[in-house]
Length: 143
Length: 485
Image (cartoon, rainbow over all chains, first blue to last red):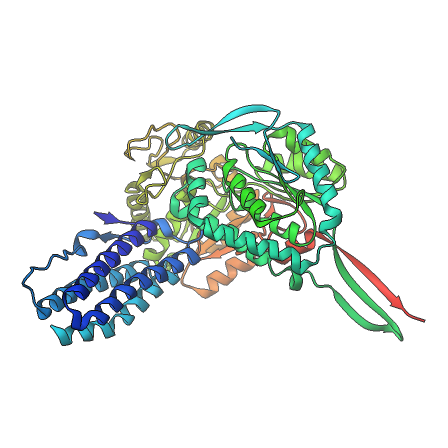
């Protein structure tokens, strides 16, 4: 599916973040020793959603190219969160890293496409990517 | 049923009741009354009575009502945006943009204690001081158009009540529900009865406003003929203040040095956004230069982008262009395309049939984007307002030629240039007659803290809506000279 408008792109990103948040909550239940980290990731995903939504609602005006800002193929960014029952922490962290890679890639491509069109929205995409760095380091240490 | 709101009460209109139709689905979504002269008189009387106490309410207290209204609008952001899409047809992105722009006017009006301050100079002569104070005048009428049912009355109403006046708002009867929703929230915000009133209707209500001796001024946004022939003279005849904003036929100039990839989405938004039903929409594209390769490549890119546009019901987030507001407007646009072709324009992209409509809705009010080439400056499709998703393309040799075309237009609302050359941009800004000038911006919509500055055939009056000019419009300056013996 090809996404073009700001609202459908943001809805898609919201879904990705929420799906990943649910995945992290599941990991928190399965790996009690890393529960705090995983719950923090889930909470942060939802904060990212609010941050992006606020940026969108603050700059989306009839002067901005909201209906023509993107050209994103969703197939490149969808991911599965299934994890085998027997999976250990390393496998779970590797899965999480793969998920993060997809989400980061979606934000980066979205920021590039809408850079000169949507003002604060692509800027916030980049902030979200930057804020994920610590998380990626943590996941790499677990993988 | 959209009811009137008079003196703090919701009352059903005594006039004819008409259907309000969603232009995308073709379904009736509600009804509205076409109110009578007696009903507008009743609203003005209530507003006049409320004025006495409201003007004595301290500005800082008055703006607390607006702060509450602002919070309620934020809380209902999505709902009011969806209402706009349902009654007007615009895409949900566009409706959310309209909501944001409307709220921003409430936010600016919340600063009234600072904005309304006067001036003072001690010792204009020894022992004598002079003051300028700003005072409200009374009841104001706000007449809204169909194309921005939520935002445009908010260019005026928050400033009017913040400065101590009372208002009677008349929304377009084609799109009555956005203002009804705002008025419900104004009621919830606790405005005293009579301060914020709303009367639905048509010409009778407008006539009643113009004739009413207790209305001090009117703000109007609508067509140029109504602005020129009805509103402005009507206000003049009865000594009312007037801000009258009319139509447009904006010209967007493309320089060969523009950033093509960034320019094309800007053009899509400008020409086809809101289905072209914006007084800041582009109508004519003037491409400068003699480089045939650039011209052909640029036009191909625009055409490809427009051809692939998703058309449908704006509540579907994937839709990029919704329907026009009603079948009569569609017919008028189709007629202009025919006129253009008769006058020698050629169709590069024929949008007379919408093609594929996402969701398979009836094509009653849908059009596709139309692009016409071989357009010349004297054609009616350049000089008259089409108000639909059409683009006429003119080629010229120089920037001076392009500016000349802008300046000979009867309308001067929002001309724009796309260039990466600062000198060209400055020349355009300096020489082009237009109330709002865009440099690499296709829709030159001023933010709430700037005036909406149309000119010539697009505007009659002196002061404009929004920002500081609205404060001046809604207040009278009084100079006081003090000598204490």
